[in-house]
Structures are given as structure tokens and as C-alpha cells.
Figure 1 (cartoon, rainbow, N blue to C red):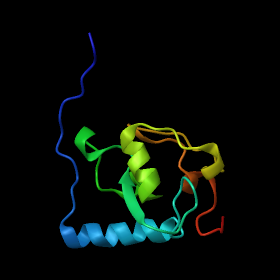
Figure 2: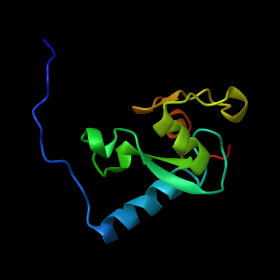
Figure 3: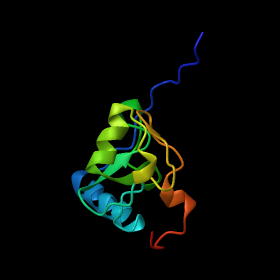
Amino acid sequence: MRNIRPKQPRLQLAPDEYRELHRKVLQRDSWRCQACGSMERLEVHHIELRSQGGEDREDNLITLCRPCHENTHKGDTLDRSRNPAGIQIDGRGVKTPLHLSRPIGKPW
């Protein structure tokens, strides 16, 4: 039998607070996709998805470009040539995000 966690209310911020958190995450990640390094079409991705109880917290958010973000939700693994850090991305979120493996604010 599977061990199922009881549902708990997740932290979801008000729109103004979320916009500020979104900006902080982009700034923390040096305005770069943490999977491929792109600085275009940036979005903020929930590592633990909202639909799976993921909260609106800085440690649950990562900057991804639109193509990499779409790939995470398709369950695709990123092309190694576009992913110099070798980050594995799947439908459950990002594993070993770049922002945790390099000093914050350091250039690519």
C-alpha cells in the first residue's frame, strides 16, 4: 500500500507578492535560464509543481526560458549541447538546478 501524504493547504501568494517573488527569483538566477543559459523569454518554474502541492517559495522556484520550461512539462530531458551543466529535467520538476551548484550572481 502506498504511503499517501495528507493534503495540507499550500502557500500561495497574493498577485503583488508573487510578482515581487518572481522578480527576486529572476534576479537570483542572474536573469538566465538555469538549464541552458539563455537570457530570452524567461519564465519562473515551480520545481515541485503547484498541482502537486508546490508552494510559492523562493526555494521552490527556478528561472527557465520558454523552450526549457515547456520541455519540463512535456517530461523531456534537455539536449546536452544546450544544457552545459547536465541538468536533468522531467515532468516532476528540475533536479540539481544550476542556481544551487554555482555561487549566486556569478556569470555563466
